[in-house]
Each structure stands twice: as structure tokens, then as C-alpha cells.
Image (cartoon, rainbow, N blue to C red; front, side, top):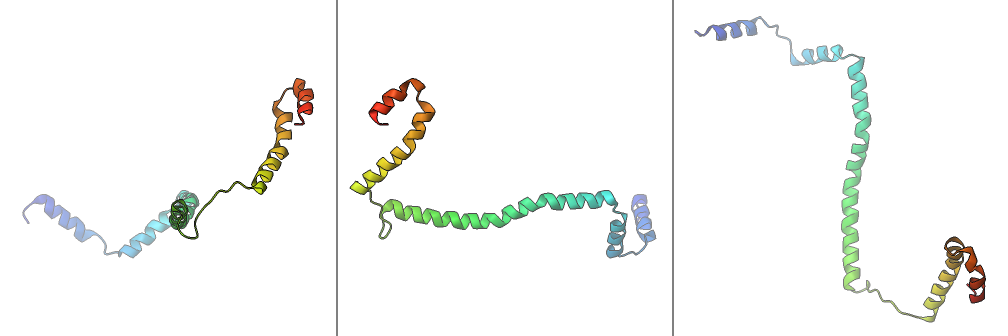
Length: 124
């Protein structure tokens, strides 16, 4: 070696103690103060929602894929997935009772007071 910078670098490397990496890591841990410990705890606390989301993502993907399969079967009307709408007397009765159940509340909430007499004549 004839380069003075290389000679100095070699001399500095030779003068270093032969401490292992594990001993150096222990020294770094001991040098950590309360601030570093508090930072580690706060980072772990804020990482909890991310960990929870990472647990939910596979469940969400599986559920979404299953729902897409079910909806596709329903839309194409494949066997045991057919959807038919029939207008029967029972359906009309259910629709009328549903309207009657909520129309009183709509009448009281949205129609003006002057219309009360007219509504009572109509039977609404």
C-alpha cells in the first residue's frame, strides 16, 4: 500500500477493538432512553389498526369472491338460483298494509295542518 489515505484507514481498522456485533447491539440498547422506549410503544400502538386490517383483508377477499359467485348465479338464473316475481293477492295485501302503516306518519310529518279535514274525508 502506497496510498497515505489507505494506510490511515488500515491503521484505524487495526486499532479498533474486536467487539462482536452482539456486544455493540447491547450497548445500543442500553443507550436507549425513555424517549426511545416511548416512541417504540407509541409505534406499536399505532400499528394495531394496520395489523387488524391485514387480518381482515384475506377474509374480505374470500367473502367478496363468494358473494360475486352467488350474485352471478342469481343474475343468470341458474338452477336453484332462479328469481321470479309474481303479483298475487297476498303481495298486494302486504303492499297495502305497508303503505297504510307508514302513510299516517308521512301525513302528520309533511302535509300542512289545513289539509287535515280533506285527508279525513279521503280516509287517509
